Length: 153
Ligand SMILES: [Ca+2]
Ligand SMILES: [Ca+2]
Image (cartoon, rainbow, N blue to C red; front, side, top):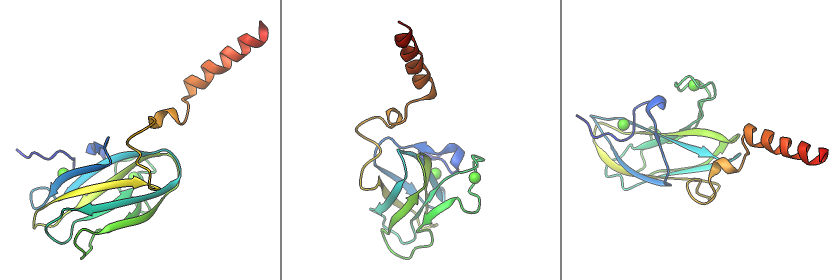
């Protein structure tokens, strides 16, 4: 049994709640998928450090049609195929708030790696909960109801 903590597809992506994660890719597990939430439009930096073999790359994915597959145009930026040890992916444009995926790809020569993600230099994983940035439809309905009541009274 594998101790793989990050699934091999969008559907089994591991939700990141910290800006860095350390994992392994290699012959027994060539893909790791992580999901993260962007609070709004911006640019993502994805840095690989700690790799001990060449070819550990990362791509940022937006599953725009939510079908769990990486369709044409859904890879927003990639260092997959890199020949640089510990390559960094810079300036990946995030068009809108939402869930995005970081897909780490390894080679048959196994390697540990640490993935560090940031959005516009800010970490999306700490501070104010991202969900509070955009009020939910229920919350605004509730607010409208209170306002209506206040006007009537
Ligand atoms: Ca995996
Ligand atoms: Ca898709």
